[in-house]
Image 1 (tube, one colour):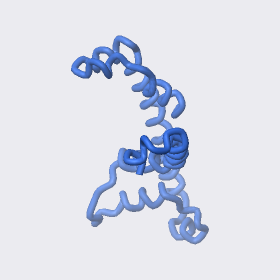
Image 2 (image 1 turned 180 degrees about the horizontal axis):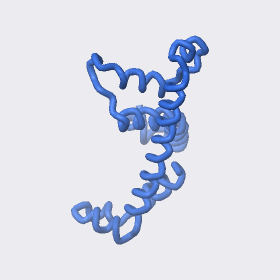
Image 3 (image 1 turned 45 degrees about the vertical axis):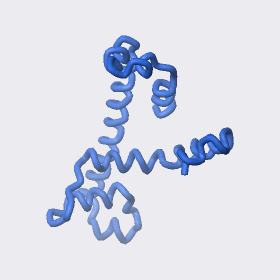
Length: 128
């Protein structure tokens, strides 16, 4: 899914030349509906991850989960979300964003290194 999104987003787009009518051009070219479909698919996947963790938390004793070291980032975020006296409130979208970022940060680092190798001097200010 990430590869498909990258292909769609990285190609030449007439909308880049005419930003004032970007939305219209994206609909005409069919890029926007494809990106929205991929966004919906990824959202469903992330919702499933969260709901699986919620089910697991409901069935397991939280003390047992902590003792077995089975608690991961999603469990911690759900725990913070459940705290009523927390300084901030995490929404499901916040949790999905953290999961997405964590899942893809390694790919972003690899891409950054490839760009640095290909263009060692031109991009040093943008990639630091």
